[in-house]
Length: 136
Image (cartoon, rainbow, N blue to C red; front, side):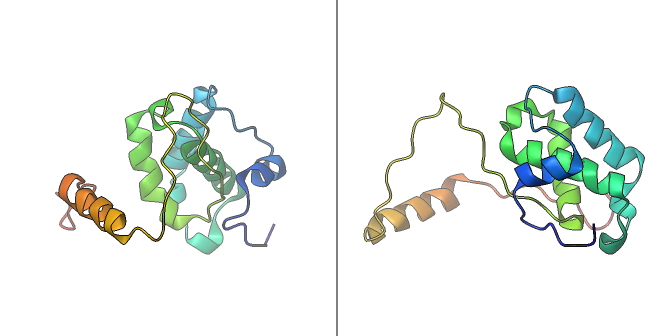
């Protein structure tokens, strides 16, 4: 295909590329991650990806975005974020997790609540670590 898939639904991509999104198939997720690394897919230019690099990235990305992060080995999380800027991505919402409580409804008129939430985020959240540019 030579058309742009960026932000197409991952379910459609899965059908087109012949894979099933299944969080219990960790061996499929791992095989896709291994392929991306073993075949140096990240070194290909964005406009010249091999079909198998594209397919394996979609497998990896769809599962990353749909499945609970605990379903992916931590190292795979690092691999994904290193590669995502080099590939078109598809869209899928996170799988429903009944263990999590429902978020409270948002009142867009309550500016004080928004300010409090943003202040709390800046106070308690840390930016992810980034690799140093000098190779250390």
